Amino acid sequence: MTNKLPQDYIDAHAAHTPNETGVQHRASEASAAPEALETAQAVEKSLDDSEVKLESGKTVEKRLLRGVLISLAGGACWGINGTFVKILLETYNIPELWLVCVRELFASVLFLVTAYCINRSGLTGILKNKKDMLNLAWISVVSILMSNISYVMTISYTNSATATVLQILSVVLVLFYVCVHNRRRPRGRELVGIMLAIGGTYLLATGGNPSELNVPVLGLVWGGICALSAAALAILPNDLLNKWGSFVVNGYAMLISGLMLAVYVQPWNYIPAIDAVGWTLIVFAVVVGTYGAYALFLQGLHEVGAVRASMLTTSEPLVAMLSSVLLMGTTFSITDLIAFAMIIVMVYLTA
Image 1 (tube, rainbow, N blue to C red):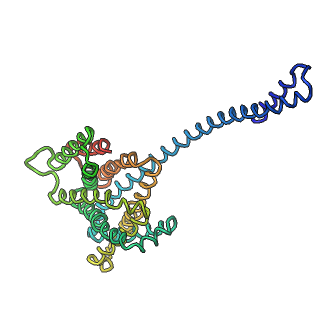
Image 2 (cartoon, helix red, strand yellow; image 1 turned 60 degrees about the vertical axis):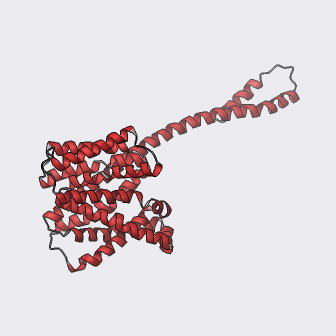
């Protein structure tokens, strides 16, 4: 393409009138050739740009599709993990705090090993910053420790789907924080989302009958704590995450949280007498349900952005509900399903 247009120009220029002398011909050719070359390059660049845009468009589509699938997979891992936790608590009688402690300690190792491979400077750098380490210790208690304990306790008193939906109410708390921090009123769709969240929680708690509770009181209490700690987890670590990276921050936070809980739980003094299936569920809870789900979410976040990733992880309550029905025979009433739907729609409206 590059050579064709200049040659066409030369051939055409050679057919000029015979009155042109050789000197005139060469002078004219010398002055016109750069213009022809520029024209050729411009045409070529235009065509190449079109090809690049076409290729770029296909690349973006593939990236978005990959990001969508990854985000859905991350939410699904969290969802089925909740059901597996319920099985460990009910079928194998694993103590809640023991399970939380073991999950955090072993998951922290996976996070820190990953951080060592991809962000070694951050892994060692944060340890030299006393202010950030104190902040991280605070976050480990308020966010990580309370979030994990309250989530497992909510599952213990209710089921994985209900626990997941109650945790999602943290979106409303984060919205409240954003409005106060930015000194703005909630937008119209956000107000609708808040109303859906309140209505969905009411239906979930009462089944539509205000004279009785459809969910145990302790389940609602732990679910509320779960939402609060999840909101704190979405807000508090932002500066540290931006500075040191997610794998570093989450690795150390889970390690600190797990060690603090280990002082009380002393997991080494209790080894559960469970079969191979039970140990498989524990390994799944650590590798897939904790580390893997979060890693998938982070990759989905990178591929499709925060808003899409957050909305796509609403696959979590859907998978939790489906797996609860299939694996544990859990039944849900019509009001439960309506409540779940209202709270999931709330996420889309407030995202």
